[in-house]
Image (tube, rainbow, N blue to C red):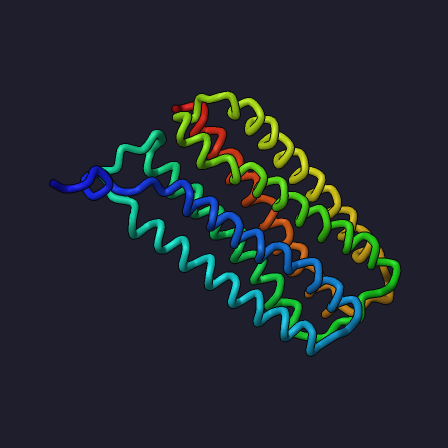
Length: 223
């Protein structure tokens, strides 16, 4: 007799939590990369970029494994499309974190001291958004067991709202940083260009984190 898991497939939610943790490992590398940028540590940046690439690849492997083991006949408590969207947005977080690392190695820049505080404020806020999203994702297994309707739901919805609020805060910090460097008369145009690319990657991380949270909110609303 075939096992039920053979007939209906395995639940993807525990591997989804594993994927979320690996994606956050990528984002957590953003702060040491930012520190290396400010320190002008070229070799440190290369090493961190290599670590980021390895971690992002590991996240991809988990994602691909989830997709390969998500049969159409599995009785999910949410739609397969919701699971796919969740994974897609998580994947984009890791991609943007890797983009940040790659841009940081393109050219050594000397960031003016007066920009350091605003730059690190944006970096730290984006890492905090990812930390908050991970706290949300850690509930996936329990939510699935409760068919997305148990006592943890209210807590998760509150955490999702926090993710959205923190993404808004990161947008404000990004605009504040841009106003600072565009307002400087003596800044190197190449430095401005690289700052734009670094900021875009950071905004992407926060934006996609918000989208993951919103996707989970849809799972809960349409349970």
